[in-house]
Amino acid sequence: MPDIRIESLLDGARRASGAVAVIDVFRAFTTAAVAFGEGAERIVMVGEVEDALALRRRGIAQLCIGEVGGKAPPGFDLGNSPHELLRAVEEGLDIRGRTLVQRTGAGTQGIAAARGSAARLYAAALVTARATARALLACGEERITLVAMGNTAVVRTDEDELCALHIRNLLEGRAGDADAVRRIIMVSKEAAWFGDPMRPHMPRGDLDIALDIDRFDFAVAVAEEDGWAVARRAT
Image 1 (tube, rainbow, N blue to C red):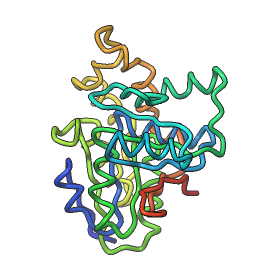
Image 2: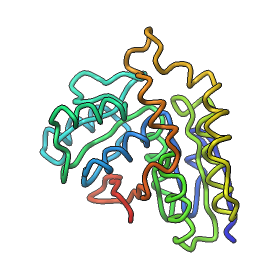
Image 3: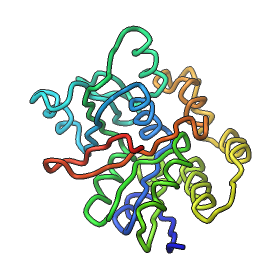
Image 4: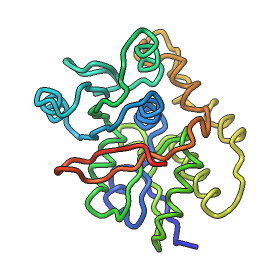
């Protein structure tokens, strides 16, 4: 059994080693998983808005998705919302075989911080929890680090911390309790933000998707490609 460690926030991502899963449930890596579920080929994960826009301008990526302060920055095609992405696909956006570039305030910052020290790297959320645990174990590393990124990578949040605990249970051979995880998150302050009329960029549909535990049977693996952190669907 590998040594399993749980870290939190940006400093935790910098300390991570071995096989690393950076966790962002609300909403970066739920959105990434939805994009792969809809056929996207790659997601370049960056720390800066300017990098995202430059990659699209150069034709390396076709769409910019993500957020600053929870909202899509000027020039981005979509925000950091799995519900918005699915609605766009339903309305005719075809992302099959395409490359997206994603910038968020927590998840992609964690990827940027961990990429130098991680032997293997994954972008994780509850929608890919079991598949991520399976992929981490398959790496054969002596250490597994789970990093709960929290709100803007500086404040711990229930959903990311509980996702880390849930994945740890799976790694250690326990079944976990998805319903219990979901119930606890549903009464958190972060869950209450979704569907709030004062936060139209956070639709209730995002919460429903993010808490659909094991919605996808694939992990999201991140590796270096041409100097960038590139995520792909891992089967």
